Amino acid sequence: KKLGLAGSKITARGISHLVQALPLCPQLEEVSFQDNQLKDREVLDIVKVLSHLPRLQKLDLSRNSVSVSTLLSLTKVAVTCPTIRMLQVRETDLIFLLSPPTETAAELQGDPDLQGNDNQRKEAQRRSLALRLQKCQLGVHDVEVLIAQLREGPQLDEVE
Image (cartoon, rainbow, N blue to C red):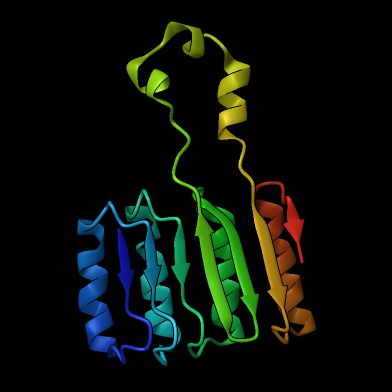
Protein backbone atom coordinates (compact mmCIF):
# COMPACT_ATOMS: atom_id res chain seq x y z
CA LYS A 1 0.00 0.00 0.00
CA LYS A 2 3.02 2.32 0.45
CA LEU A 3 5.86 3.05 -1.92
CA GLY A 4 8.72 4.90 -0.27
CA LEU A 5 11.54 6.13 -2.46
CA ALA A 6 12.67 8.99 -0.23
CA GLY A 7 16.32 9.84 -0.76
CA SER A 8 16.78 6.97 -3.20
CA LYS A 9 18.59 9.05 -5.85
CA ILE A 10 16.28 7.67 -8.52
CA THR A 11 17.26 8.89 -11.97
CA ALA A 12 15.09 10.51 -14.64
CA ARG A 13 15.19 7.21 -16.53
CA GLY A 14 14.11 5.34 -13.40
CA ILE A 15 11.21 7.76 -12.95
CA SER A 16 10.08 7.20 -16.55
CA HIS A 17 10.00 3.43 -15.96
CA LEU A 18 8.24 3.86 -12.63
CA VAL A 19 5.63 6.18 -14.13
CA GLN A 20 4.77 3.42 -16.61
CA ALA A 21 4.49 0.84 -13.81
CA LEU A 22 2.50 2.90 -11.25
CA PRO A 23 -0.88 2.50 -13.02
CA LEU A 24 -0.44 -1.26 -12.52
CA CYS A 25 -0.55 -0.67 -8.75
CA PRO A 26 -4.04 0.74 -8.09
CA GLN A 27 -3.89 -0.37 -4.43
CA LEU A 28 -1.21 2.23 -3.56
CA GLU A 29 -2.31 4.60 -0.80
CA GLU A 30 0.90 6.54 -0.18
CA VAL A 31 3.88 7.34 -2.41
CA SER A 32 6.97 9.29 -1.37
CA PHE A 33 9.57 10.69 -3.76
CA GLN A 34 10.91 13.25 -1.31
CA ASP A 35 14.55 14.29 -1.32
CA ASN A 36 15.47 12.88 -4.74
CA GLN A 37 16.66 15.98 -6.61
CA LEU A 38 13.87 15.47 -9.14
CA LYS A 39 13.48 18.19 -11.75
CA ASP A 40 10.33 19.76 -13.17
CA ARG A 41 9.83 17.17 -15.91
CA GLU A 42 9.98 14.18 -13.56
CA VAL A 43 7.65 15.82 -11.03
CA LEU A 44 5.10 16.60 -13.75
CA ASP A 45 5.33 13.06 -15.13
CA ILE A 46 4.64 11.61 -11.67
CA VAL A 47 1.64 13.87 -11.12
CA LYS A 48 0.12 12.80 -14.47
CA VAL A 49 -0.32 9.29 -13.04
CA LEU A 50 -2.59 10.44 -10.18
CA SER A 51 -5.79 9.66 -12.06
CA HIS A 52 -4.65 6.02 -12.41
CA LEU A 53 -4.19 5.53 -8.65
CA PRO A 54 -7.75 5.45 -7.27
CA ARG A 55 -6.78 4.70 -3.64
CA LEU A 56 -3.90 7.14 -3.35
CA GLN A 57 -4.20 9.38 -0.31
CA LYS A 58 -0.78 11.04 -0.19
CA LEU A 59 1.90 11.92 -2.72
CA ASP A 60 5.01 13.50 -1.21
CA LEU A 61 7.32 15.30 -3.62
CA SER A 62 9.10 17.41 -0.99
CA ARG A 63 12.73 18.52 -1.27
CA ASN A 64 12.98 18.30 -5.05
CA SER A 65 13.85 21.06 -7.54
CA VAL A 66 10.56 22.57 -8.69
CA SER A 67 10.25 25.88 -10.53
CA VAL A 68 7.43 28.39 -10.08
CA SER A 69 6.03 27.48 -13.52
CA THR A 70 5.88 23.82 -12.50
CA LEU A 71 4.26 24.83 -9.22
CA LEU A 72 1.55 26.58 -11.23
CA SER A 73 1.10 23.43 -13.32
CA LEU A 74 0.68 21.48 -10.09
CA THR A 75 -1.95 23.91 -8.79
CA LYS A 76 -3.84 23.43 -12.06
CA VAL A 77 -3.74 19.67 -11.50
CA ALA A 78 -4.98 20.19 -7.93
CA VAL A 79 -7.90 22.28 -9.20
CA THR A 80 -8.90 19.86 -11.97
CA CYS A 81 -8.24 16.41 -10.44
CA PRO A 82 -11.35 15.40 -8.47
CA THR A 83 -9.54 13.23 -5.91
CA ILE A 84 -7.10 15.90 -4.73
CA ARG A 85 -8.23 17.52 -1.50
CA MET A 86 -5.08 19.44 -0.60
CA LEU A 87 -1.91 20.73 -2.19
CA GLN A 88 0.55 21.85 0.46
CA VAL A 89 3.67 23.76 -0.58
CA ARG A 90 6.01 25.47 1.87
CA GLU A 91 9.61 26.16 0.96
CA THR A 92 10.87 22.64 0.22
CA ASP A 93 7.61 20.82 1.08
CA LEU A 94 5.39 19.67 -1.79
CA ILE A 95 2.59 17.32 -0.74
CA PHE A 96 -0.65 16.24 -2.42
CA LEU A 97 -3.36 14.82 -0.15
CA LEU A 98 -6.08 12.90 -1.97
CA SER A 99 -9.44 11.35 -1.21
CA PRO A 100 -10.61 8.25 -3.05
CA PRO A 101 -14.04 8.56 -4.74
CA THR A 102 -16.91 8.61 -2.24
CA GLU A 103 -18.94 5.73 -3.67
CA THR A 104 -20.64 3.73 -0.97
CA ALA A 105 -21.43 0.04 -1.13
CA ALA A 106 -25.14 0.86 -1.32
CA GLU A 107 -24.58 3.09 -4.37
CA LEU A 108 -22.51 0.40 -6.04
CA GLN A 109 -25.28 -2.16 -5.43
CA GLY A 110 -27.91 0.23 -6.75
CA ASP A 111 -29.86 0.91 -3.55
CA PRO A 112 -33.10 2.56 -4.81
CA ASP A 113 -33.31 4.86 -1.76
CA LEU A 114 -29.95 6.39 -2.59
CA GLN A 115 -30.56 6.46 -6.33
CA GLY A 116 -33.75 8.41 -5.87
CA ASN A 117 -32.26 11.13 -3.73
CA ASP A 118 -30.48 13.66 -5.95
CA ASN A 119 -29.55 15.87 -3.01
CA GLN A 120 -27.53 13.10 -1.36
CA ARG A 121 -25.80 12.35 -4.64
CA LYS A 122 -24.91 16.02 -5.17
CA GLU A 123 -23.59 16.26 -1.62
CA ALA A 124 -21.42 13.17 -2.15
CA GLN A 125 -20.02 14.76 -5.28
CA ARG A 126 -19.22 18.06 -3.54
CA ARG A 127 -15.52 18.45 -3.46
CA SER A 128 -13.36 19.94 -0.77
CA LEU A 129 -10.08 21.54 -1.85
CA ALA A 130 -7.46 23.37 0.18
CA LEU A 131 -4.38 25.07 -1.24
CA ARG A 132 -1.53 25.96 1.09
CA LEU A 133 1.14 27.82 -0.85
CA GLN A 134 3.57 29.39 1.61
CA LYS A 135 6.94 30.98 0.83
CA CYS A 136 6.65 30.08 -2.86
CA GLN A 137 8.03 33.39 -4.14
CA LEU A 138 5.19 33.93 -6.60
CA GLY A 139 5.37 37.06 -8.76
CA VAL A 140 2.40 39.22 -9.74
CA HIS A 141 1.92 37.34 -13.03
CA ASP A 142 2.13 34.00 -11.19
CA VAL A 143 -0.63 35.08 -8.81
CA GLU A 144 -2.78 36.19 -11.76
CA VAL A 145 -2.34 32.75 -13.37
CA LEU A 146 -3.21 31.08 -10.06
CA ILE A 147 -6.38 33.17 -9.69
CA ALA A 148 -7.48 32.23 -13.22
CA GLN A 149 -6.96 28.55 -12.40
CA LEU A 150 -8.93 28.81 -9.18
CA ARG A 151 -11.89 30.40 -10.97
CA GLU A 152 -12.21 27.25 -13.10
CA GLY A 153 -12.16 24.83 -10.18
CA PRO A 154 -14.35 23.85 -7.26
CA GLN A 155 -15.16 26.11 -4.37
CA LEU A 156 -12.15 26.29 -2.08
CA ASP A 157 -12.47 25.42 1.57
CA GLU A 158 -9.11 26.94 2.39
CA VAL A 159 -6.48 29.09 0.69
CA GLU A 160 -3.31 29.97 2.54
